[in-house]
Length: 64
Image (cartoon, rainbow, N blue to C red; front, side, top):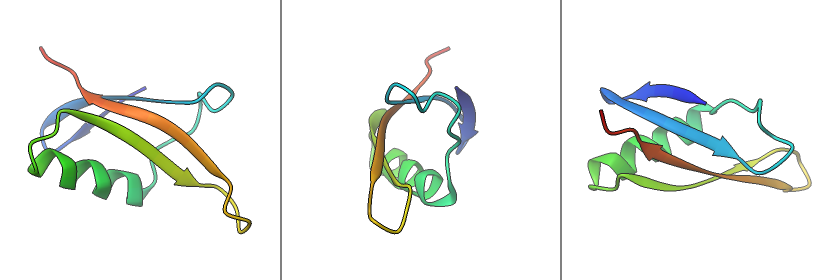
């Protein structure tokens, strides 16, 4: 999936079975911070319930 963060086109995807999952505000802030620190890609981890289950994924800046 694609989104734009800090003027960068970002491709992100989640583990199998979670393809339709969107980025939450915490994910967006995490990506912003990593971009500001010079990263061009990184891991995503989203807590999905009160039991602490997580969904993992990956993001990266798309080079034009």
